Length: 286
Image (cartoon, rainbow, N blue to C red):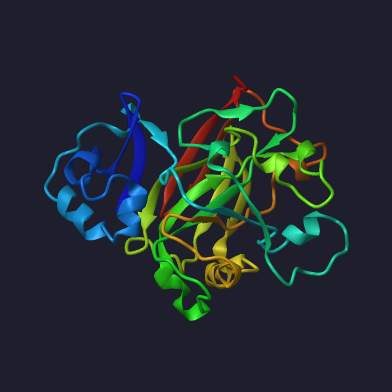
């Protein structure tokens, strides 16, 4: 299934994307599963399938204001420097990493597909980073790699928007540059693991105004999906609805000479052939 969250008259709802539009699940099974996070946590996929079966769409997809699929995950993990050749982009002659690079984002820093990405007023260095995102379906701690796949509910996409000149304000962190309000996006929906096997491999392409800037495959990850789940669950309990942005390929705007920062009016699309397209236009803050 393709499960998504959106607004109707200013109220958050969720549903399933089907041919011709969206079947709203909120009013059909919302009593048992008030939002998509609850559906994931309470193993409500079978109920969702039953609710959608034989139903006509309630509305067209392009009529909806999409939200990030999971509105209130406990954790939004972000992995850095994970594709082959990414380490070389830093030109610091360092060895390949032994462990994943890791930081977190707040949900206030991301919007849904079709919503504006805000270029902050204090910087001209807003950059794009297209990524595949894992959505955790089953709680776990100290998860062995061979069991990791059973903890994945599905996958979605992320533009892990980054304000480059704010990344190094502190000595040991990148948090500031990764958490500007509405600087990134997640969506358009979650494709469930039964329809799109996370084992892949999966392609990932980022386009800016139609120009391919990033293109790679999860077959070239230094830390594959199962390794990330095993690593993260060593120190933190993974919970239903948690999301893991699994890293971006080479080709971000900062790596061009001169850098190619996003400007107001630019359209960024992050695509994976078995998941869909996450599309956002850059707008000015406020």
